[in-house]
Length: 220
Image (cartoon, rainbow, N blue to C red; front, top):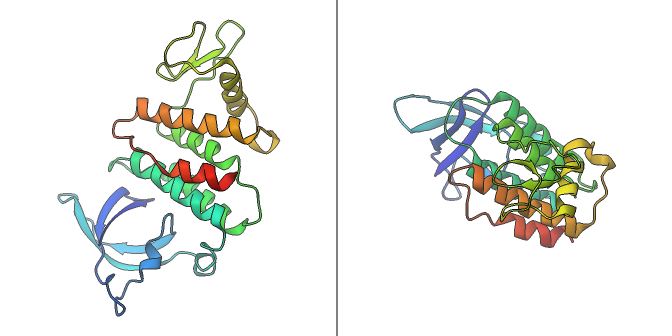
């Protein structure tokens, strides 16, 4: 099996994992679920795009056994994985982003009864900051419409500006601690869709995104 793995020390890498297929495989397929936290010993040859994993094991064995027990958390991991899969490129390490992703994944596992309604928007905005494409919050009475193409608030509507109401919602998310925000589902859904369109405009290869559609259904 060939897998893309986001590592703290090497960044995004592609690895060949042997011994996955079949009942007698040395590597169990459940180790390779979305956002599984793993400890790995790998071969890293910078002159080749594909390297091998020598050893692999769950990073937090007790938490690993719990990670599929909550449908919303499971769907959120798929959503977060698709964001990272389409947004990241195999390049230099991004340890701060890695730590944030690991913290978010652990939060999903250890807080299965928590309401995760704000997490998709928080995740999209935080990842955008690490990637250097964070929306500029220059909102003011004169410039109150957020333009997806420009990445900032502007004064006149265009084909890529959000509605006044959705622009105001984005402004609140950029300025307020998430636990204090209580927007209805339709507004959160519209903002998630807008942020995915924003990623599409600012990152090459970020297209054909689907997991948010499932997430919208589950969060209803």
